[in-house]
Image (cartoon, rainbow, N blue to C red; front, side, top):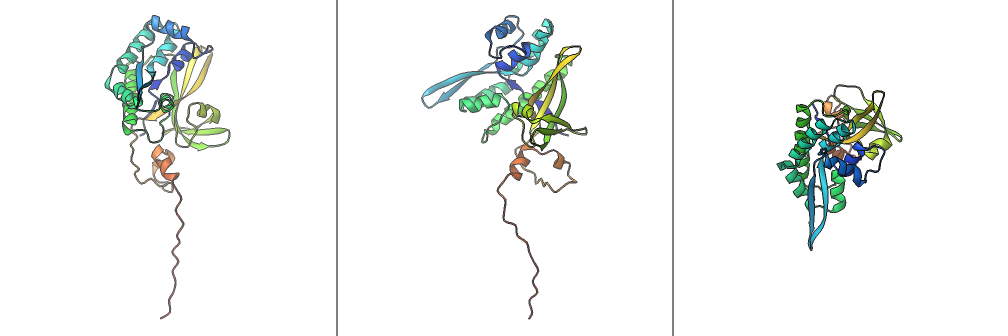
Length: 265
């Protein structure tokens, strides 16, 4: 069975948006409030290097900080502190160290895309491994504390159909659902086979918003195992992986039809 988890890292803007949904994601004040009350971790500073030395810095955070910010917004300060500590523990672990090393050698734009949930073409295998390992540890942290936040994963699946105005999300042993294509695009997940987690963020007893979050397959490997789109008896025909997409998008080969010819002797 496929194991889909939300993208394990976020930017500071995502954290601020979770704390103050109607404000500016780039505002300094809300984040300072989170840090002052220990409702957010400090993140991991990534120093990027080029041939002539330091090429800039960026900060990446554990996605648990989004949940701690939601808890703080709901006036659950003690729980927010607890989750922020779990985020800080993840950020000090070997998975984040591996992620930092991989990001430090990438161009700034590509490194920012990784934080937003996009793996650039040609990204080192170590980067994908670090992200999957980090996503697994993040899910383990969530499992240890089932009431992490007022938000809950409403749907985890992959895009099985792409249409002009919407995409179809499929899931293991469950019904499919429609999602506006612009919403999937905002999560950088509007292509066939892309993984998405829909999160219902509760505001009050009678109101909530649904957010599309980029996701990752915890067990995806880099190998192609002979998948055929014509093998409808194969369950993988309904859950296309990134490798399948690359395989099916390859250069078409000339069609060869062998016709028997009778030769008179």
